[in-house]
Image (cartoon, rainbow, N blue to C red; front, side, top):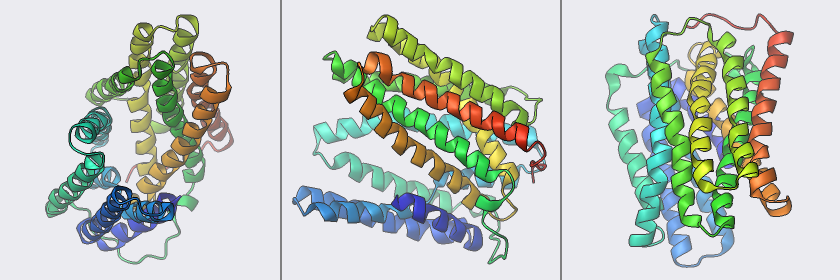
Amino acid sequence: AATALVAPLTARLVDRHGQARVAVPATALALLGGLSLIACVHWNAPTWTLFASYAATATVPNTGGMARARWAHLLKDDPAALHTANSFEQAADELCFMVGPVIAAFLCTSLFPEAGTLFGGIVVLTGVLVFAVQRATEPPPSGRTAARSPVRAPGVPSLLAVFLAMGAVFGSLEVVTVAHPDARGDASAAGLVLGLQAAGSCAAGLAFGAIRVTRSADRRFPLCLAAMAALMTLPWLTASSTGSLLALAPALLVAGMATAPTMVTAMSLIQERTPEGQLNEGMTLAVTGLLGGIAGGSALGGWMVDHGPGPATTGFAVPAAAATLALALSLAVSKRRPAVFRTPH
């Protein structure tokens, strides 16, 4: 909730005053919130201090969005190269999803429980500092503008609704995938199985960036969502029919292959529909929609695991249903509003 409120405001400041000028102090403030959280946990502070400390971390800037904004600025006259750059960014995101939890789990178990959070905060601040000194690639700040928020731009609200449904896919899939091996007494395999899903997405992102796309992003998007909806049924069908973790692992690997192309295409649409000079805010609104969907999907997936017939049956139905909802929303909007798109800037 704190991120949903603060992140778009941080991104608006980034657009107005420049990435380096805003991102570094915003990240430093977020790191202080993380350090406060670690201290409160370590010394058993009252519970409300944990919420207050974690809320302070909401100022961390959307570094992925800032990177994509730089690519959009540098490659605005080369759509093919921009497609490759966006695909690379998505593959890098998936690599973080694979490596980050493994490193955090190792540090928390081998050093002390708060080590993973501490390491993550230090890495974020270091990365933002290295990113900020690259001034030659930074988009020029737009300054204070009278333009309305990107959330009111044509085509953006409907796209944010699709992002919300896509986030529910990711959030529910993670919870249910962890619950499946845990219910069978093999909780240690959950990280590996989740990593396979991210690996499939990472590989697909690299392959997607290597090909030359001919369709426009708005025509590709329903096709990508249809592929995601179809592939998300594989883990559900596999877990329901066999219950075997060995069979579920490759199903998740294949299911993940639709994630990166869908995200790349969705981010391309955000780049196209966001008004000039507000790209960081537009990207952050998309990420905020994803986070909201992840939160709701995680809660629904967890509820289905706890109260349904079991994670092998009803649990994996949630990401499949969420992907189908995302496809339905996309198709409904495209039929109702066929001409809301503009050419990439």
